[in-house]
Length: 290
Image 1 (tube, rainbow, N blue to C red):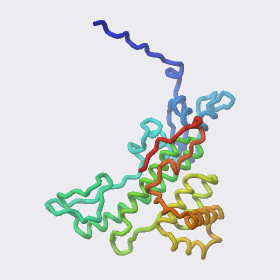
Image 2 (image 1 turned 60 degrees about the vertical axis):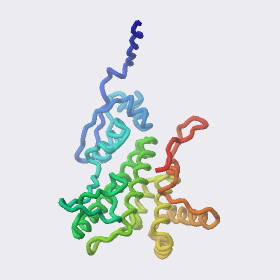
Image 3 (image 1 turned 90 degrees about the vertical axis):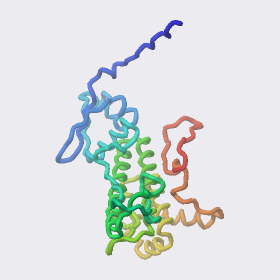
Image 4 (image 1 turned 45 degrees about the vertical axis):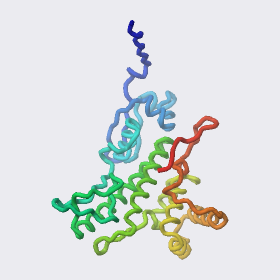
């Protein structure tokens, strides 16, 4: 039996073209070299910047004032489809384990990497509480890092990256909520992310109206803090963005008139917090529940 004919390799000019140089940062800049075709496919900003009408397109050099660490996370996603391998991604450590114990971990302590806690070791109570506080802080740092990734995706007009970051943000909030009823060291407690008016102000200043991030923020606040948050906002309305107040009232009204039970932001279809502006007619997002 004869061998099937070998497939011919087809290579275009872009396979041999010089990579695009992207200089990123403020006073301390860092250079990145990227496949131009790949980044232009995912970013309308780069697609426009690489046109020959602009000096950046003719010189094959684009300057950005963004954070190099955040841009590096974007490039890892661009290359792998995930940000997990990004060196600059804030790490969320495992809880410590004390060798020698065969007892099960407390039922209220869950490990992020497994649906069930390990059964071979058990942290000491003090060690557990300290490490829970550390892990909670790491969650907070990763959350605000994901926000920076979202803002970058907005400025680069990289819709698929923004949607991916929204999925990761919802997943982080869902995992972090497992800490709500745990006990920590003195002075440490579970706090709701981005509930201070300054954090809310920054998010609303850096996102356009109807941004999925705004929608998630409101859903998250109403679910986790609920009436307490509404009362606090009502007493301090002058320090909160007008758009946030309108979004909050709109969601409260929907809940009042909707007889169906409210669906947790954790259980909504991921596409709820996506943007799909460049899709063919009849497109259906493949994203399922988290």
